[in-house]
Image (cartoon, rainbow, N blue to C red; front, side, top):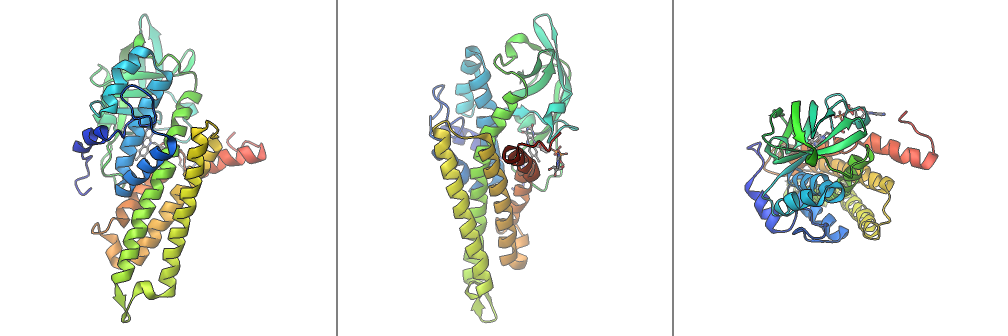
Length: 346
Ligand SMILES: Cc1cc2nc3c(=O)[nH]c(=O)nc-3n(C[C@H](O)[C@H](O)[C@H](O)COP(=O)(O)OP(=O)(O)OC[C@H]3O[C@@H](n4cnc5c(N)ncnc54)[C@H](O)[C@@H]3O)c2cc1C
């Protein structure tokens, strides 16, 4: 984490463990149910949000769209290698001027004979510069479509975001396309408008809702151990009622978030999960995890600001988790529209 770099050696290991595309059937994927996949995200993010983000992007934002919208040739080419961690993917939807509102995107793909020519830029893209393939969402004459853009394609360059105090184990990049010509076969044939990338985000948000619980668990665990040992006024601080209240609030909120995710996972396995329910879990659980990280930081006193303990790292990471894949307020608007029937976005 101090190195501000992705531990790349983990990628193959995660592949060997079956962590990539783990709910997909065939193509070398593990075929897990959604609760098992959620627990996997929880445990990965108990380590670090950046590692869980890597798995979420590879699985939900790259393998899932290839599996769902791709041709058989595209699936055969990419899915087994990605499941093994031999190939890395990224997902380019956000642009400099279009984050919460991707429908305004300006990246364009112009049809030209047997190719498409891409122009535009994507911003804040996880795995951007290390990806072998980027799924890029662009405007075409037939609406928004998804394209597979391979590393090294002329006209495709990347620039990494430097100076991050959050997600230091994750690579975040800008993707730039200048007259970037890609063959027609690299269009994801079943993509159809903005609903296609939104479907991918829904998959990823489900994993995020579980993952945030893991970060909260690690913060709670650090605070509990510290409170049992740290003596002030001749007693361990864990023996004071106000500290106990903080620890109890943490364990209560973690348990409630787990129950919410468990139920959503069961509904997802039955194909009955609604996107608004995923929004509820993403906004609730990430908010909960951030509050727990801040409470745990407080319990640790001055020690909580160093990386000797994992808490401040989780806290900074969770600021990114809170912003990406829809902020708290954007998910509130999605749920608000559902329950009132009135759209506050327009
Ligand atoms: C570490 C990291 C990794 C990322 N990885 C990826 C990736 O792999 N692929 C990708 O495509 N994107 C990625 N993103 C981008 C992420 O999805 C966007 O940052 C997110 O959608 C928010 O967009 P924005 O940053 O432009 O903020 P904005 O959309 O500009 O929002 C700024 C603020 O305005 C508020 N706001 C916006 N609209 C409204 C409204 N209508 N009502 C009320 N409040 C509103 C928001 O809630 C927020 O508080 C990543 C971001 C980070 C930080």
